[in-house]
Image (cartoon, rainbow, N blue to C red):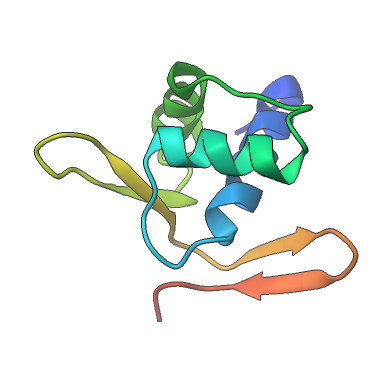
Length: 93
């Protein structure tokens, strides 16, 4: 189960991953977060990797692909994200 501040980080990560159809590295996720918030929110790659590996992956929200040089992550399940509207996302049918 994801609680408290972990929920906030997890939501931000899922929003960033939902912007791409391709798996992303933690550096790419960090860049999307910074660009989407005008630089007001910055997450270092190690923090993102911790959330992805120890919470989101464990709970089944993301999967990782491990090419030789780095891990790449993508959303696995149906995820509803709310901004100005509800968006449906499902990469794997």
